[in-house]
Length: 269
Image (spheres, one colour):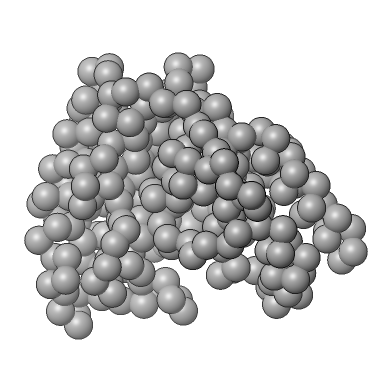
């Protein structure tokens, strides 16, 4: 593990111990705010983002930070995504956290020119630390990993329908889901991407693809030998945040199979 990986791990662990875990199942009504339907922010999100923004700025003063809550407050923050930047999801899985159940974690990525260069995924409850750097592989707790499939027939799919429009949701439910063993989504990208690499899920569909949710996970899965890409097989870019649709898979072959199915329903639209 590099010195930077160790430093980021320690920052994420400290942030979780300081701002997140003391409030797990211990939130008051005023500690939770609903930004949109089923989209929550808590005091833990805000305090973690503030701490990490300050810490990462000290680490690299010339690299701006794009935090989820900062971007929600001021969309102009998203303009930073085209150059060198840190990207922070201070509490991924806030819906779970606010309702008192796992999983939830912290996501941090380092990007430049719209491309993720490094990513870190920290599970706040277990302390599992996933990290990857472009061209250097993917690691969990310092051990290099290779993505593996579940080996099940049909393959295991975690399909997020949350942000699909009704017509697309109907198509996916009737034309895609029957070809898979569909399991519940964790509502947490910090959990979903490791599941794809660790042989727990084979494929996943994400409709909303905000950079703080996906920058670290896409790189991690690709570096592990799985595949995450846009539905049209173009690379995921953090500065292309207006687009929707992303497929993650434990293997390139499984990605190809699901992408072909999704292309067929797109042709029907």
